[in-house]
Length: 339
Image 1 (cartoon, rainbow, N blue to C red):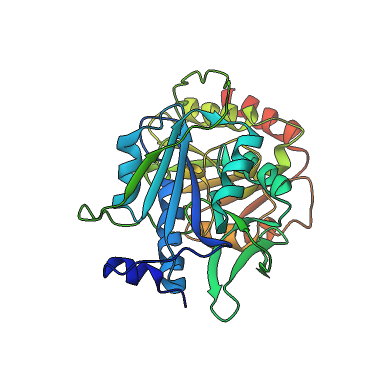
Image 2 (cartoon, rainbow, N blue to C red):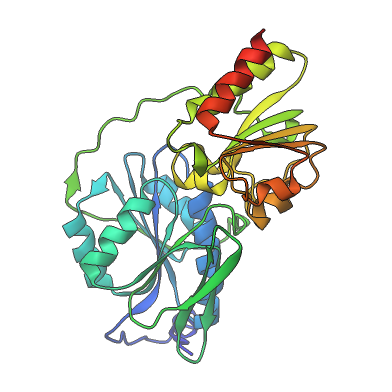
């Protein structure tokens, strides 16, 4: 085990060794605050680093990255934070990590990191494991062990990384946000990378039906089966239900597939690794229905499923099922509700 960090704490000189060392996390400051998903990865990195006797370093980028946010990363578990206000080019990111040689490099599986990680892995000529739901360390080999869902969440695949840097993207919500420790201290350093222009982000007010799922009487949820029909159908159906039942709280939600497609945020994902719900009525539109989705909806009083595949698992758990194309069924339901 690498105990150099203890030697440094005790004041002993530490001789740096060549090679891959420490755990790095890339965090992105889209807004003037840290994202929960990035803090979750930092917290898990802290746990892994403690088992390896390694440091946790974070590279914070984005238009809103600054020294104050970098210092926030320290109190959440990082040993050092490097920051730069902007979005680095692929080649400058390659040069940065080629110089620092991370043993493990982690990203949140969210906006920014979802595209940046595979591009960086290709440039670093290393493997990347995506959509991780669990991370652990094989202490004998100093290798990262990653669990990822397969078969739409019906099973898990466990992958052991054998070449450095060992890279993974981590799904949102699978680890808790670590507790703050305002007594922690660490190095904060501004870095000069080559920046690329980023298109301006236009703030958009959330639609009326994107309310906390636990407050909803009725939830209209969409899945990957909406690909051809369009996500707007889910919001249109929610609006029609609200017009018919104005005294009820209506919410829109999505399956993991909808989140992966970028149609809805992870905070509205119905899944055992997202939100479990217990509404009076749950309408599943184009959702296949894995065991993770069923487990998150089993407390719903009534489940209505709409799917083109009569053998979809969702029908085994639904109280009512409609077999057909969502782009045909949902407009027909809206017409009935508005009549």
